[in-house]
Image (cartoon, rainbow, N blue to C red; front, side, top):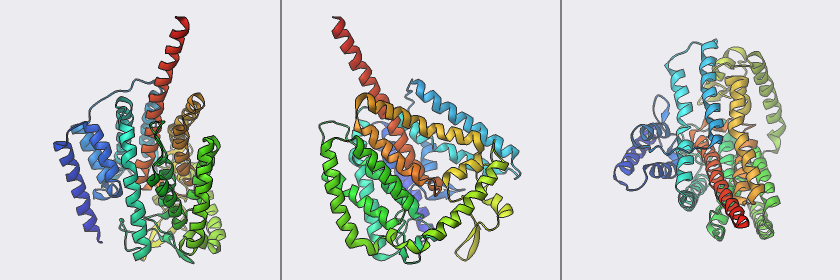
Length: 441
């Protein structure tokens, strides 16, 4: 499948979005969010000047169709302040950078902040429309089913079955293949599957049981992580699973243990096809290689600690200062665009101030969600945190946010986490007021 074919698919996706907006009844914001979900595998397709399907659809929606539904919560002010400071920090980083500024820099800055359109609409819609998240939960398994089926085709027919122009060199290892699924990088795919597996277990109605399909997809996601050979993704998933089991009810502990037994049997019979069992020979070499890259990246940060070297300048910087950070793609030498760690990439490119803003956007929602869990013992809070942990742990070894689809997934997790918690806290406060009124009466 050639690149022009993908561009046609991308244009058709944008036209489909316009058709939905113009002719489908109901909330335009909900239609936008569901469109993003159903078109997720194709959101990364570049239409022009590195602007993707997601970028174009989101900007069109913001300008032409978005309905403003404000959420007056002080917590959101913290995130808005962090985003504004991050914006000013990136501009300052450009102005102080040793590299010249051109239109590409401003396009890159624009694409960086277009991402926030999605969680902004998600939080607002989820908060004001109490039926939205249950509807989303019913549709989400369809996306995972597509991704698992695509992985099956890839394993059956080879890496020519792909939704990207170029696969990362790390898909091929000494003793096999690390399957990237709908992504170009198997590590991104592992993080996507790990996070998605926990989202499948969320129940928005307490009396509702988790569907058998969701449990099946949960298991297939885990098998997919093994096929992708993502050790960091597996570590993040295992940590999320531990958190889920630790806080879950006894019945879920039994389900998970029984499920783990079946999963272990499946892994035993499929281990020859699962890349994670075939990476023993290159593990030490990989660690030594990354340790050197991480050291060099940290040196870059120490030399540019406040505002960084400029958003998107990592490859330009190492090409001059660390020319050993190159790899061969399609017989061409290409400089690394990240230092084998998402956290170090952010440290080097946006500096200490930007990195603190980044941490605020991640850690504050998790801390508040954990506190809400202890107030109400709602296991959905833990599942959101477990999903986030899959990415947080895996992000240390790769810049998974280099793909817009991973950015959308993380925005979905944190946006849903925030909106759902705001709703539940409001319900809890109303219940506490009713109890106080009853006691007074």
